[in-house]
Image 1 (spheres, rainbow, N blue to C red):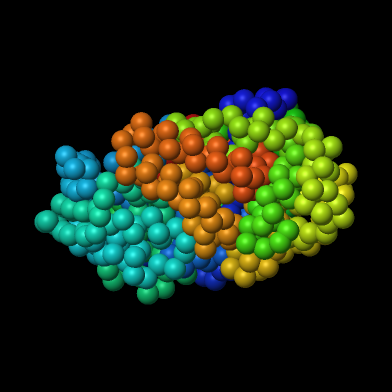
Image 2: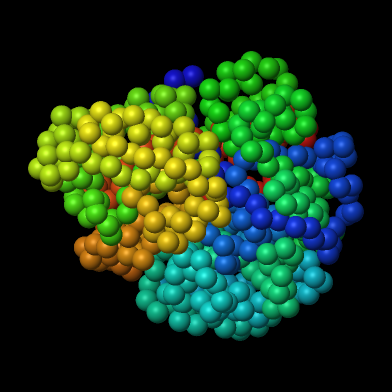
Amino acid sequence: MTRPRRTFAATASAALALTLVACSAGSTSNDEPGNDSKDSGGDALSVGLVAVPASLDFTTTDGAAIPQALLNNVYDGLVKLGQDGDVQPDLATSWRVSDDRKTYTFDLVDNATFSNGKKFTADDAVFSIDRVKSDWTVSLKAAMDVVQEAKAVSPTQLQVTLKQPSNDWLYRMTTRIGAMFSTTGVDKLATEPVGTGPYTLMEFNRGDSIVLARSAGYWGEKPFFKAVTLKYFKDATALNNALLTSTIDVIGTVQAPESLAQLSEDDRFQVIEGVTNGEVVLSFNNSKAPFTDKRVRQAVRNAIDHEALVDTCWAGRGTLIGSMVPPTDPWYEDLTELYPYDPDKAKALLAEADKSALTVRLRLPSLPYAQSCGQVVKSQLAEVGINAKIDTLEFPAQWLQEVFTNLDYDMSIVAHVEPHDLSAVFGNPDYYTQYDNPQMQKLLAAADTGTEQEQTDNLKEAARLLSEDAAADWLFLLPNLIVAEKGITGLPKNAIAESFDLSRLARS
């Protein structure tokens, strides 16, 4: 199957997050399935993934793999994201917004219980929202700064007042920062998560798997599977072999798109193709030479043949976007033509910047797409006189420490899979991209506080500014590619949320 050129088509798998530092913990409320979910027949499901969580605590550990496993599975939020990107009720059955757009009043379910046995009330919601501001340490916590006050009106009614109107805040509540925690269940989040979700943690096996058990006391619709195992593999070949040998039932994120032909021709399997918001970013360290020079950043962008890159490193599957906005967002604009492949122009820009012979460090996480695409980037940059010295960092721990925290890099490649992440990645000067542009920050602020149309207009302008300024290069948008045994239903066509919602899955 050929990749559509610069079109909104088969797009991206969001299972690119991180790797596991694990241990074991028993669940507190479940239907007591057997430990080996694959051997439990129709009551169990096994999903294969490559990138695993660094811990089970997404309040102190960055990366997308933890909410992918736990959000909407172990943890519920007040609201959640639908397949089309709409905000839907979850623990909040409904909500009202004041005329000045600053006060949200949520009506809550009255029958939800945490896995530690404590009843969920508005006091837990207040605790969860306040705790993001006081105790969370990850960069995404900043999305809660707009909250002035959260208070419990009654056990089943919550009122949240913002400092100013925010188009973004309710949407952010569908992500990890909106997860609801028990006031008595946050002591061991790294190994013993306590939530109100349809599943509870049964096992957390270091570097190998997470086993989730169906919660006997779940307040909502009971999931089909008694147990779901998330099984982690070191590489794409092992992942594919696990499906072919019936060790797993589902490949949650295809890591070798060239293998799809073999898998799709096997009548035991079905292939799900859809979209994600996972931008594969060739990031620059904007705070240090040579990337403080816009001409060098522009040269790199002109040196990359994006169509050839996707064809070579991701089997032609992916969408070219040109900036930090996927086609599923209302403010998307195809900006790929701003920096067409032009090696002669790249050389001229480098000569103008007196950087005709340039050596940079390209520090790559140990993830399949980064490793594969990194080699293509290195080769294409060499054609214009840039020597990209590659070294591989174990992902997530080493990459997070060296690149994300220590800023010890010139370039890197990583997929940013969080929804609506332009402001998080390029609006915060302290983020690892180190992009500090007052005009960008002004546009983002105006987008958040303005009308819906003003939000779209300002974010479209911000995306264009970002691209024109060559703050990074956007290699492509990953496609959502899932392969599963036939008969497995409820698989997400689009991976545009942070979670892999296991409660929707069933076997026909």
